[in-house]
Image (cartoon, rainbow, N blue to C red; front, top):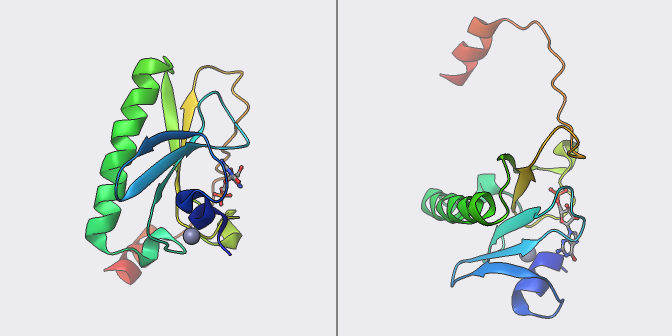
Length: 129
Ligand code: 5GP
Ligand code: ZN
């Protein structure tokens, strides 16, 4: 059973902030910051890598519309977009979704820490070509 598919079907309650034929946006039950929102395709994909490119593009275009609403109506000063992909990256619900995390100030209870490693950039680039 997929919890987000059940939410989309209306079998589990949620607080909706946007809905159309393809996409649903709900408030995250665990609000990291005020207005923390999840944007998801109505069609189930375990993660965004599995989505057809046009459906992914459409999802992100709608995420941008909702992000603008957060900016305009909640008066946040910025936001983080996050797509956790697979368990190793912290994905807990295996139905792809975009986190929109509004940012207000230094007291926001959210932290992204990037520790720096020294890798051979050319080696990486050659692998990706
Ligand atoms: P992930 O860790 O997979 O990127 O994020 C899953 C998110 O879904 C978490 O932030 C979690 O709080 C949220 N979540 C899990 N179950 C529910 C639920 O039943 N309703 C809502 N609104 N959010 C949920
Ligand atoms: Zn699902």
